[in-house]
Amino acid sequence: MALGLAALSVLAFVAIRETLDRQIDASLIAVASIQAASLTDAPTGEMQFHEWELTPDEAAQVRDLNRFAQVWSEDGLSLLRTRYITRDLPLDSAALRGAARGELIWVEDTFQGIPVRSLFYPLGRLGPLHGQHVLQVAAPLETRNRMLRNAALLMTALLLVIAGGTVIGSWWLADRAVRPVQDIIVQAEEIGGQTLGRRISAHADSREYERLVQVLNTMLARIDAAFDAQRRFTADASHELRSPLTAMRGELELARRRPREPAEYERVIDSALEEVVRLSRVAEDLLTLARSDAGVLQARLVATDLVACARRVVERLRIAADARQVRVIVTGPADAVADVDEDLVNQLLWNLIGNAIRFAPAGGTVDVALVRDGGEVIVRVTDTGPGIPENALDRIFDRFYRVDEARTASAGVQGTGLGLAIVHVIAGLHRAKLSAGNRPAGGAEFIVRFPSS
Ligand code: ADP
Image (tube, rainbow, N blue to C red):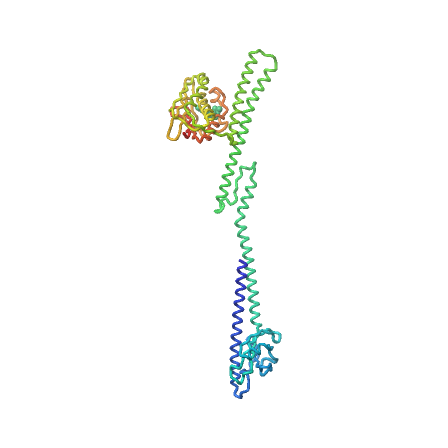
């Protein structure tokens, strides 16, 4: 912008100078022709300028417009001068020669310390009598130079003010535009691992940055939730591992205090073994979840007959079911085939059917019904147990979540609270839809919809 303005100023300056020069030249020609005419008008035939005395006031007013005139002979002899000058005008001999030949010649020079522009005007064109005479008319250039100086000063000042204003203005605008982002950055930087609950409040309701702040805050909320879940998971896991270890240690220390009967030792060993089994199950479940979190638990999908899978799992759970006098029924079509990782799906079925057997009352029934429905194979596991309380339904798949310790304990084997979390992870790996609910007739109902092959 500054460069453009500078170029414009230079152009304007040149245009003003041209105009002023043209006016001066035009006035010089006009004055020269008038003076030349007055020369010939003299009745005596003598040369004389057509001029009269101005009052001092008038003279002061036309001072800048004054034109000096002088007639030269061909060889540079002064023949006549206007009355306003007391000395000869600066004579340029080349110009004199040119004018004597009949040309109009322009020359710039100084006269009595001031710059002047002269026109050498051939008088030969007025008649043979003046063939060797040249009229020089000069105009002082002071006014023109002053005007040009003032114009240059004005333009430079304007240029500086506009360019300076533009720099300051754009600085201010850019700063205003960037400041909110800076504010948001400062607040975002202050949020760390210990202060994840904080949110960005700067410019949260400005039209331009509302969305950015919203997106950042949503992201913070997600990170906060993930951190929180991780913290709770670690705390729950340590608790889950420490309690049985403490119990086992207590029992073993007690047994070692004095010699005991073999039957007593056997009981302690059995109890310790039970805890060890439970601990290794918890450790295995934790490992599965940790691998899933780390993204290393992957499903190797192979077309698998899910009815056959369900039957094999039920077979392995037969002893537990018989012990609780629970009937397990598997039904399904021959084409209930889906692309699944068989090991993972076996674990999913084991957890669901195992839970159903644990919660079904003695003499109850567990139904494992598989159905092909369009592009899906639906696995539905229902039991005739107490079902899941409505308020627990949306937390049932959370890690370490147990509906109610007393109820779980009364169902026999103590759970880890990780079984359904693992079911959830495995379903996710297969892009299967998972839901938990209750049958109208009572008893829990778990439904997994696998995309079929
Ligand atoms: P756990 O190993 O403690 O059973 P799960 O994750 O498998 O942990 O189950 C979480 C909770 O869901 C359990 O505490 C239990 O109360 C409830 N639950 C699971 N399956 C059933 C079911 N078939 N009937 C009633 N409640 C169930």
